Image (cartoon, rainbow, N blue to C red; front, side, top):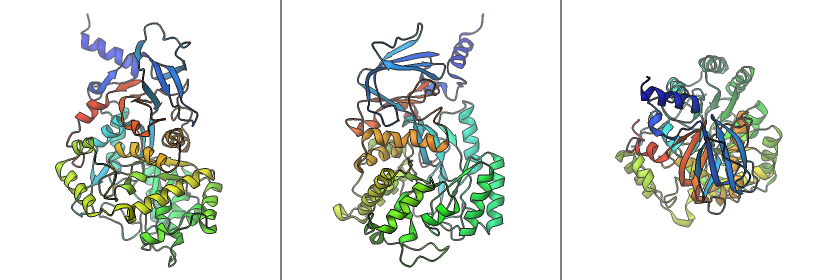
Length: 469
């Protein structure tokens, strides 16, 4: 007779794919077939919520979504009564990192290969694109460990090392020496397995053009957090995506010089008139060239010392040193209703709303950098709340954080929405974010490929670890 442990592992393997000792302790729903009954469904498409629904998961895929009264649970299924809960698609985070600021004013970032994958998954992020890498080999190996079940985490799309010119922000970045170097960098890292690149603030026009051309030849996309190059210039080059939005577009700086990153003042940004011809033309140009914008509102909000409220879960997750560093920077930044950072945030909210209403593809991510206030996963949830603050409805904000990311990745046939035939990447929320968007934080269960992960166990496993490893 085979030992019970072998039989249990066999059941898990048949039901949900490979679960190993690295992931099994965090999985609390592991039946091959599961029926989630009496749930509210926000399906990710922007459609109105559907009440009292049943979702059937069979061997990692959604096989049925319909009214609870007429959608029967298959015989032998694990049935879960989730009355009062809402299910949304797994979040598709499009500006994620596996590093975090070291603090103390030192321009270094510590790799968070242990804590961040767990934080992302616990927060409902089931797919994550790293928008820039400082340790690309580490990121690639973390992806492989997650894919083989050796550790919990989201499905990772790994971006190569930053494509940066001289005057980089820290010693962990390679500085390009010209267009040929840009091409070599792209070709090498594509061969290593990265699926995108990110151009950075001091890249030249010639280097960006060479990198975009080389990446597109290999079927890989390029995004950018730019400064030396304006948005319309990048659009003409052929860039696919631009990070952060209006707050980093330097083309409106009166003294902007080619290939030079200027120091734009907060007053310049706050005073930009979104209805002016130049800004409207920029938005129209991006939409016409199918250039996506990534919303990273939470990282900008963190620079306002009066918001958001400090959460206990944040203090629990990070090291004591990281907490002290963030709380100190927060205290120094307090400025009330007239704070410059708050004026910037409001301007960015207005821009993103205008961009979407003009037909642009807005995606979203946490960007856990800055002063440390935008933590992996938690900031993805906060970004959804801020999108609602900026004028989007809750279902529109959920679409931006789920379906739109899948659309950019070319993965809408598998992820990003809730429908029969899709992968069972789902977030179960205790409450109704369609009525109270703050409920987006009340995640009680996260399904990835049909395996139901317990957020509380994931968070418990990283207490005091974020900021260290």
